[in-house]
Every structure is written in structure tokens, then in C-alpha cells.
Length: 218
Image (cartoon, rainbow, N blue to C red; front, side, top):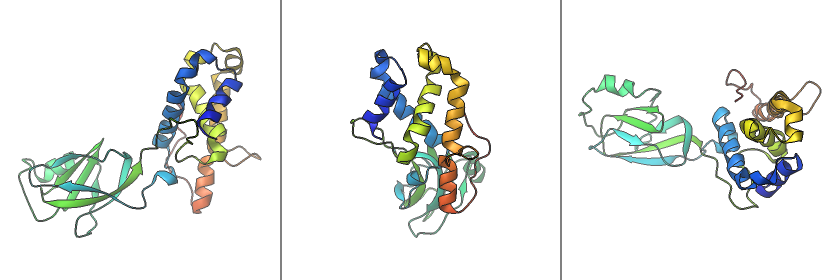
């Protein structure tokens, strides 16, 4: 389903046309939040993005395509580097951030930044989950979400996120937010005797159990 189709789906459910100008933003925000909550395989980099470092700085912004979870890092020699999850780790190694070397040996990722030790003229190769590409043209399709789950996952997510605004619409209000939350869960995880949910579909495709703890809802 493309962007035009998703908008039509919202209209068909009774979301008032007065909100039409917001539909694109709502849909993109829903996809972004789904990608933040779950590890979507299509958004997981297979080839790294490079980041140049110098001896003049120890803290860098991550590439603009970064969304979450740097899961692998190598330096210019292609030596794999362990990744700490708090920048304080680098502070503890070199509190003044004045040590230099031939190559980076340690990194820490927090928020949208990466800290390095020691400072070095080097190139880091980073693997992470990238941002989904935002949709703008009517023919654009959701990035990272299989087509069979566009209506089952994205539409309930849009309604849940904007329920207080659009809940006055008779069809939406009559069902209640609990109904749309259950629709969203079913789209993600399936139902007994029903269709396979998106997250379980990913897990079955990999042949492993899914990870991530509890099922997030707004």
C-alpha cells in the first residue's frame, strides 16, 4: 500500500477530511515510532556507513541516517571495536580527552553521538538501524514494513497516536481506543488461530524467537 492508499484507508474509516493535511505527517510518524520500538530487518544495515575521526575531537554526531543501535563498529584497519552504551565509559578511560593514537580502540554510543578513544586520524565503519525513508509522494511506500502489514499495523498506530484529536469521529469513537490497541497488537503479534503478526513473521523468517521484552504501546 502506498501513501495514497494509506490516506484513503483513513478516510474510509471515517477520519474527517479536515485532517487530510495532517495525514502524511501522521503516517510517517507512525512508521518512525514502529521502527523505534522494533528491529525491522530492512532497516538493519548490511553495508557500513563510514565516519572520519581526527586528533582534534573525541565526540562526534552519528551519521544523519542513524536511527538506533550501533551493533557493529570497525576501525580503518577493519579491527572490530567493542561498543559501550554510555559515553561516561570513555570519560572514565580518558577524563581529559587528550590522549591520541594511531587508531581508535574504544567507542561509546549514546543518543545521537559517538565518543572515541583515543583521538586518532581514523575511519570508523558503523553498522546500525537506519531511519526509515520519509514518504512524501503519493506513490511512496512505507520503508521497512512489509506490504501485508501496512493496513494492519500502520493504520491502528496512526489512530492510537492521534485518538484524542480524531476520536470525535463517530466510527472511531464508537470502537474506542481499546479496540484500536487490540488491532495494533494483533497486527504486530497475531492472534490465536488468526493471521501471523508482523513481529512473529520476522522471527519465523529468521528462524529465531523475537527479542525486546514487553509489547510497547503508546
